[in-house]
Amino acid sequence: MDFGLTDEQEMLRATAREFVAEVCPAERAKEWDEESAVPPGLFKGMAELGWFSLPFAEEDGGDGGGPVELILIAEELGRASFDVAMCYVGVLIPGITVFDWGTAAQRAFIREQVMTGRQRLAVALSEPDSGSDAAALRTSAQDRGDHFLVNGQKMWCTGAGLPDTTIATYVRTGPREPKHEGISLLLIDPRADGVEIRRTPTLARHILGTNEVFLADVVVPRENLVGPQDKGWSVMLSNLELEKVIITGGYLGAAQATLDEMLAFAKTRHAFGRPVGTFQALAHAMADLQVEIDSARLLAYRAAWLLAQGKPCGREGSMAKLKGSETYVAAARLGMQVCAGHGFSTESVMSFRYRESIVATISGGTSQIQRNGIARSMGLRTY
Image 1 (tube, rainbow, N blue to C red):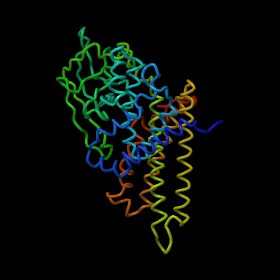
Image 2 (cartoon, rainbow, N blue to C red):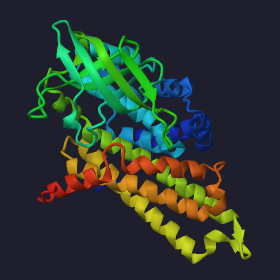
Image 3 (cartoon, one colour):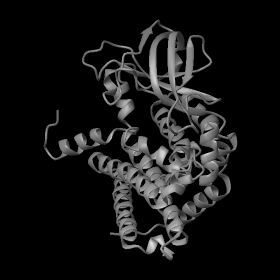
Image 4 (cartoon, rainbow, N blue to C red):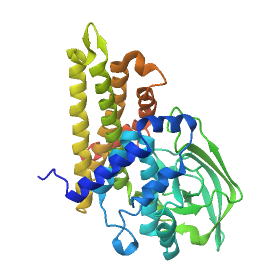
C-alpha cells in the first residue's frame, strides 16, 4: 500500500496551509464566530485558488481533482475551524450535485457563478419532524405546470442566510408513501416572495450560521427542478459518501490543531517547577490522542482512496465520519483539561474548539446513524 502523496497533492496541501495561516488562522476564525460573520474574501480566496472548480472535469472548467485532493483541502481548512472547512464543503457538495443532475442552464450556473465564488449554495433538508429520517420530509411542492408552489418549514440550514446564496431545497412533489418516492430537489431564491429566513441561536458554528427557512406559497419556476421529478432520493444520496469523507477531513484538521495547541501550552506552562506536559498523566493522554487522530486519518483517507477508484465505500465512509467526529470531541475535551483555567477562559482558542466540537457527532449524520449503517454492513438489523 502506498501512503504517499503526489508532488501535486503535496503542493495543494502546502497552499491550503498557507491560505489558512494568512487568511483564516484559528484566532481570526474565533473572532468571526463571535461576530457571527464571514468575510466575503474567504469565499473569494477559495475561488481564486480554484478550489470550487477543482473536482470538475477540465472540459467543464475544472481541474479533474478527486476525493483525495478535496479531503486535503478540508483538513487544512479544519485547522482554522470546522466551520471554516464547512464554508468550503457546504458549497462544494451541493454544487457537485446540481452539476451532476442539472440541466444545461443549471450547469452553466455552477460554472459561471459557483465555481467563481460569485454565488453560494446552501442545502435545506431537515425539518421539525425529519432529521436523521430525511425521507420523512413534508415540505410540499405542488406541481402547477410551469412552476411549483412550495409550502413548509426547513431547519438547520447552514449558510442559508448569507448573501448571494441559492437554497437547494428537498421537497415532496409526490405522495408520502412510500416515503423514499415523491421527493424532488428545487433551487429556491431566498429573495422570492414567501421565503423567510430566521437565524437559529446556537452554541457555535456562527460563521456560516444555522437557519430556519419558512416557505409560504413560494413560486418556484419549473426550470429550477434539479434531476427527475419525484426521484430526489437518488439525487440526495448521490454524493453522500463524498460528503462524509470531505467533512471528516474538517474534523481531522480541527482535532490535530486542537492537539497542537494543547501541546504548545503544555510545553510552556509550568507547575511544580516543570512543564505540565512532562507529567506522565498528561503526556500519555496526549500520546493516546495522537494515535486516535492518526487512526481517524487513515480511515478517512482509505475511504477517499476507494471513492477515487470508483469503489463503494458506504461502510468505510461511515466509519471515517464516526471516528473523525468523535475524535474531535475527545480532542477538545482533553484540550480543556490540559489548558485548565486558560482553556475555560472565553478568550482562549481552546474554548472556541470546545464549543464548536460538540455538534460534530450530530451534524452530517449522528454517531448513532453511522453505527446503524456499519452494523447493517455487518449483517445486523438495527431498530
